[in-house]
Image (cartoon, rainbow, N blue to C red):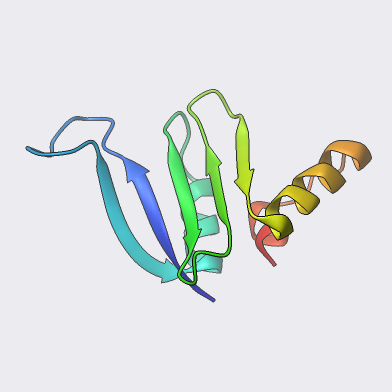
Length: 88
């Protein structure tokens, strides 16, 4: 699935705004996030059906029925599931 990836400009290199916007496949974005830490990002359905974000403290934020259900499942089962698994 192609989604939008909104990433914080933590080095403050942009002249206007604090976020970068990219378009990509969920699997590639999940792999990229797995290699990074300590920044804020959002992954957004191109149909605006859901949004998943993580702040710099590791707190997940989910909006949309599918995301809130998946986050509740992870919370109740305490499973260590990957980001790409959460987004499926």
